[in-house]
Image (cartoon, rainbow, N blue to C red; front, side):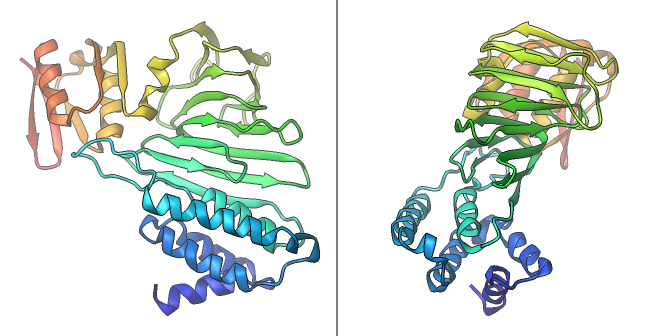
Length: 328
């Protein structure tokens, strides 16, 4: 790593660092190609830092455990490969380290912040400081905050994410979306809240979640979901519908598997654009009302287009970076 990057790390991790230095340091973690080298350098700085007496007794044990985990990740990166036609994004595994680092270097118990982004055509796995796990779907981002003073863990979500939340009754876990908040103790669930979609969907696999009004939107009643239930909020009508579903239809994307049940071609195209990082144009709007059933696992975008062509009365052609779909 160049001297320039090392200087940024050194300034950002200093006890007397200012907000600008910290922002520069955080920005480095958004560069997946530098992830492990950054961790190594931060650990070097951490080892040199004098910690408060209350932390020094067990520091070596924590340091060694953390270093072991980082080396393990380095040997076996947690990358979810969608398929060969997609841009692959490195899994975001900095959360555990960032949380540890700031919790032990900052003496004022200030909140821990970080963010992560999964570009189009990729899926990222994130490990939070509390060991909760998040799978971040294509074209999605989160901002995470853990405030020990307030005893709360918060995630602001744009896009779609699957959560496996570590149970901690003393520190509630809240997922914020533009239309409602999801209050969690410890559970597994999926939230789909893309800005361009006309609906926000929360699907519960395990445990229990409570859905309440957000700062920008007032729900008529608080909603409690039990396993196998899903709430769908229509952004236009502001109405929420609760139904029982097969959760695998809505969460299998994290395992690189998509299940379509009576899905309109309109919705299918949006999903394919996100999954494969491509642009698709439909020449005839009437085709958007066609419906498709099927499962995608390891198929390429070309293989999927061939399946659609054989299933529906459509044809396709590829021009430069765009896929055009038309009627037969």
